[in-house]
Length: 221
Image 1 (tube, one colour):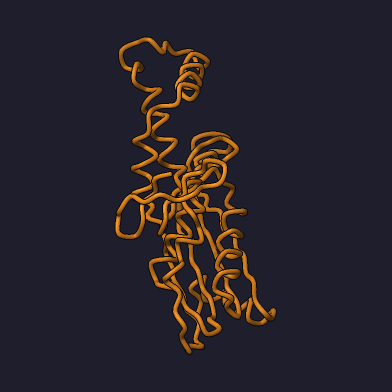
Image 2 (tube, rainbow, N blue to C red):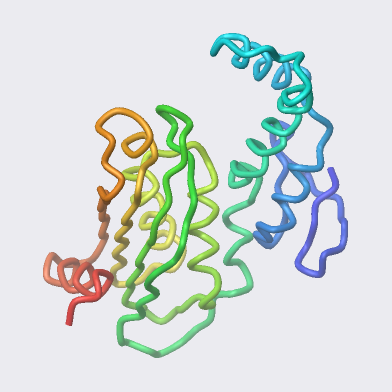
């Protein structure tokens, strides 16, 4: 199977169950690859059925290419399924004696709610206390982006980011806070355009450290 490596070269790599696993976590390349694939006839038919179901005419001029556009869009915005998470940080972890907390705030993310397939977006904040190993700064936003670009619920996404970083970096502790605006609550239902959902997850060797890292992720002093 052809995949892209860090040098943007096409190489062959085995992938389980036919899953596309680009090396290096280059999300832009993965999004372009998925969006450029030939439309899936099943997806095209499903979009036409949806158009018909809402009372539209899939054959009218303005909607003739809509199934192709929707299929391309959905594959693009769910590109997180096609990235090998381990390759995102492999080669970007460094031995370091730093013993002070590291905080990365205001990471922009865009995701799709799995309940209504409507967007939610916002900011993620990450804090961790190294234990002899750190990761390149750009990799933390990459991890957030990869988990976000799937059908998600915010609570699970928050825990997935925290768990992945805790398992791979083996820090003394990690905390993740996510603040999101959900269009399922903005465009429909309760209609709350100003409502922000906040979720958090923390894993640490002590409760005191857990609280400290959550405070740092929240931007508290």
